[in-house]
Image (cartoon, rainbow, N blue to C red; front, side, top):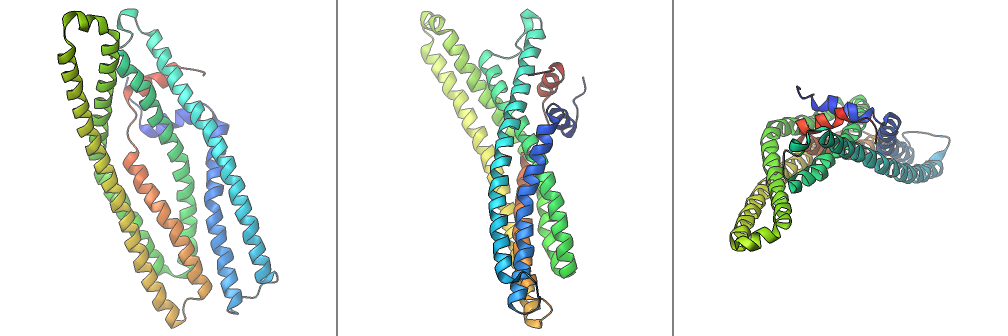
Length: 319
């Protein structure tokens, strides 16, 4: 069987509980929308203070609107978190159930292609990676759409500053794409090393009496220490590469934000940018910077789904 692309595999997972997946995406999109609305309110507030805008509600009405928005933000956050818990448990349960069904459908003499400990590690870690990828996917899509809306608003204010704001996004996507293959190799190596350690623990515990009878305790412990050392090196390389990419992403975004602030200062002095526009830019730049960082991390952690995942998903039907 030819493995499906990762995005199609995630779509199959989402269709298992379509309303939960859709509600999860909508709630987190609404949660991300709050900062954008707050930026528009801040723009109107400062323009009203400087006399460049005249609203019937006045500054007091705008402050009350901010309070209502903050309360709504908290309510949406709690609701989205609750739905996310249900979604993650549903998807994790689906994958583990299907993995078990796949094992039971295999011939008895070849039920487990791996050791018991390594199989348990795959049930735990591989299912978690899949549900985590689905969780990130719908959130990043909603944030991306809102970021496009924020960029359109900023383009209406000042096109040059907005184009500078896009540069970090392009650079982060390019760096993450170049680094994805190396990160995939490191992550595969660390996963295999973890599976070997887990499998060794299961084998040792299952054959304690045999090891004692053969007097192989020292050789077994030496082998176990060697596997742990391999796992330590693989995990260290994986974590170092991931943290390095996260640092590059965050610093690129910070440099772009600083450049935009310098441009905004010159426009304020010339009078072509109002105080409210500047407040809106600062607010939206924070949102765009957060999305850029999240996008870089998502591209770094996004990895193809294994053949074992695919077979397990397609053999199962219900939890």
